Every structure is written in structure tokens, then in C-alpha cells.
Image (cartoon, rainbow, N blue to C red; front, side, top):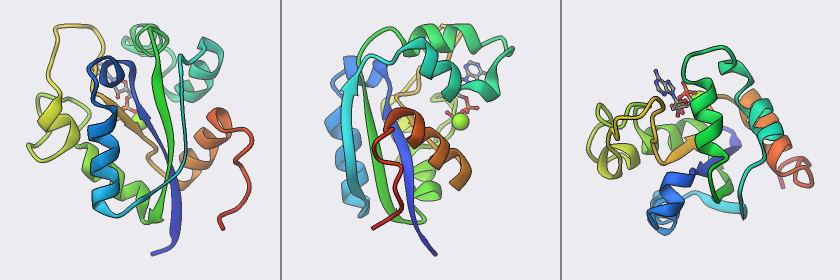
Length: 145
Ligand code: DAT
Ligand code: MG
């Protein structure tokens, strides 16, 4: 049970729908710490790095287009087992299947698009988390306090 940092993104759909505060509220209510936070419209170069594992998949281009479509909130979330813990808060990738009680299950739905607009991103492993934090928070790559 080691102290971890995870990269959370409130994606452009969540930002546009005014759900940033609701997502951050759930993270804080769970007991995690917001270690850093900024709002920006992500550039395609960094999105390509961030989503490199999905390059070539049918949803890749729509995913990058969607993520570049407007402002999003980037957050470093900190806590013991925060990576697994935030993935549990977020729920399943498909917001229709995501369980009620989760961010995606309570707040998301299928909008009939090629890409799942599912409100949040959360890193899926310690390696992903450090890699993704390095992409979006180049000045925050130092070790945990
Ligand atoms: P997650 O965001 O749950 O880690 P992922 O890493 O597999 O899911 O995919 C990244 C994003 O791409 C996901 O949040 C939404 C979109 N996506 C994934 N699989 C998809 C699919 N089969 N159809 C449409 N969009 C998809
Ligand atoms: Mg993922």
C-alpha cells in the first residue's frame, strides 16, 4: 500500500457539462489529495504521446479529435493506492455499462458517437501514471514528498 500519484483528466465533455467540480468533489470525498491542477485545451502532439497504446485502433482518431476539442482539467491525484482507487471511482470505460455509484455510471451515457465520451481519464498503472504526469506536468516529475 504505497503512496501513489495518478493522472486524472476531466475530459472536454466533463468540462463542457460543468462536471469538473463534481469529479473533484468525489476525489476529495474519497480522501485523495489534489497535488496539482490546470485547465488547458490539450494539443495533438501530447495527446498522441498520451494515447500511443491506442494508435491504429478504430476509435483512435475520433478520440484525439474529441480530446483536442476544448478545455479539459488535468489533475495529479495523490494517495495510497490512488491509481486503483481512482479507476474504481471512475467505473467501466463504457459509460452505459459503468455501474451506478461511479463517475461514469452516474454522470455518463452513450451519445451515439464513435468514441466513448466518458468524462474522465485515470492512469492504469504506476508506469502509466509517471509517464502521463511527465507529459502533462513536465515540471512535476520529481519524486513524492
Ligand atoms: P480507459 O479510459 O477506461 O482507460 P482505454 O484506455 O481502453 O479506456 O481507452 C481510452 C479511451 O478511448 C476511453 O476512455 C474511451 C475510448 N475508447 C476505448 N475503447 C473504445 C471503444 N471500443 N469504442 C469507442 N471508444 C473507446
Ligand atoms: Mg486507459
